[in-house]
Length: 235
Image (cartoon, rainbow, N blue to C red; front, top):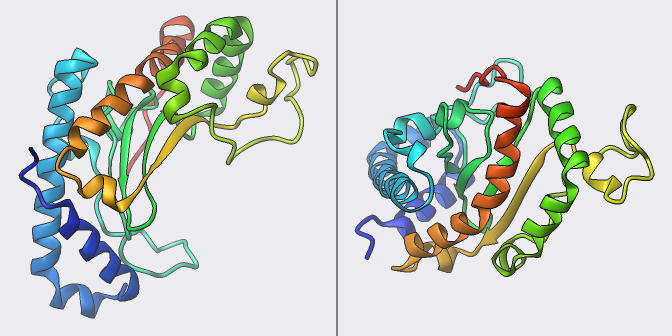
């Protein structure tokens, strides 16, 4: 049974989305502090469950390693809203939110909550290595995707970021050519506000993470096969 108030988190974020300015935020700082405290409590419980039940390498990660500041960097952006309108936690080995490895991301945003796994925004060298690994071992990917738990939550890699053609150096007639067109190898499942506010949400999201682990393991093997890649910088 969870003792953190996710409904309060969503209520605060919904109001912030309608009043994304410094005056409102300053007047509602106590609400933010309460929502942020609840989010950190959820994040700590989530990381601990993942480390205990899914991946011992996550042990030792703290919420501060895996969550983002609410303040946006607007220096070079046309969008001058000063605050992020979401909370997100990304437990992943070798650095949490700074890791390039596949992890177990949970996103809180009213009407747009989700769980996501896989590798987001890979460097060009890492992206090429991932495509090579998938091309060489596509039957393993097929087997992971055929599992009922994977089918229940994910189905396939996300299609948000794709090339129009198979990149140079890869077979355009490859049986899963669409996989090679991916610019990011993520997979996700939406979560309703009701789901994330339910008393058993932590249990539910850990079950989703268990379904994600085999694909994360496959993608993360690339780091062993091709060597380390520099971690990303996060604000």
